[in-house]
Image (tube, rainbow, N blue to C red; front, side, top):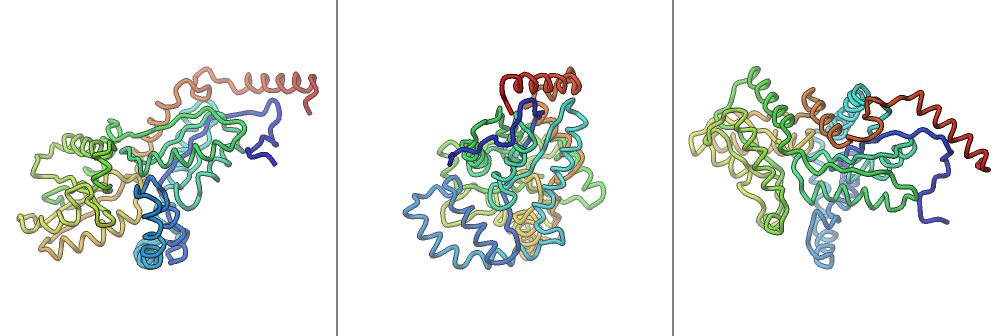
Length: 369
């Protein structure tokens, strides 16, 4: 048996097309302990996520974390689970459909968009096989992380490359590493804030909360912290915010090691003591709302702020399926697919069909079945 994924369904003259694989972090299949155990085991076993020697980390993971954490995490997921299932998966599927529709309008030739999660389902393996079945020969990988981080962006590429190593016929491949300072991304964030403030009372301070990583990763060369700071600076400039009107913080720390600071929860606990009674919180590192935004920021951190003496707390949703967000992501895709046949204004489906038929006839004349 071959170790490669073969082209058993290939025939000469088969039409090919461009493809886009959207990748996000992942979600459990259900808000229960067994599902969370499977998800966390896959997630926390990734050496990109936890850079501790395996001989040291695996006993901690299997003996201390996995016996207890899944049940606690399941209770948090139950607070945000919807009739459509995981919010992250539901929103991501809506993004996929919107991007597919917009790219069909922009591209002259055929394009297929698939969704994959780095951990859990739908998997990168399944997403790539769907694109392969559609005849994708030119493939763009777009991790939905505005800021590059080895623990998110790079591991998405790792899983993609590992899967493609099994293919006999690999597609032309391009990747998007980040879009943290893309003008349209900053504008989409800016307008989402203006839209929200036009309908709601504006807080005294805007807290921009990004997902945290160990501080050690910064010193080892991960650009994530710097890209978060640049996103925040550009957004503040667009909003004409003065330094005292916004804070840049980091959330979701795990373990005892020092992570990027200042911490979001500690900042929200301290602001009322500084006389700040109302805050708005936005998470510019998340393309779609998920556990970290809907439970940790919208619910848990709100309690920290109110218990510390704050009076008014607002979480401003992620860009999700916001029209400007979808347009921006399609702009990024177009920029990274320049030169592909499907994006050319000269693309002619009828001409290509005739060429395919001619190719098929020539192959048959030479003995192909």
